[in-house]
Length: 68
Figure 1: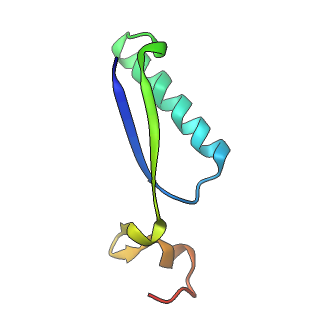
Figure 2: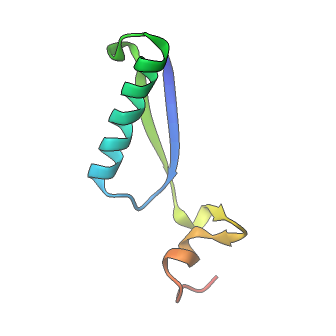
């Protein structure tokens, strides 16, 4: 039983997360020839105050008026 963990910043809409999980599950099954029902796929959400993108904290990018 393959396990796939996806780590993303918090703040994504529930429908976006559902589509991501479904797409990853389907792609893994397609790529490996393993039945999709065998996969366990889950999300781990990290606060956007703890994610850096290009040297900038994601929260500050999403909220330009936020104080560091």
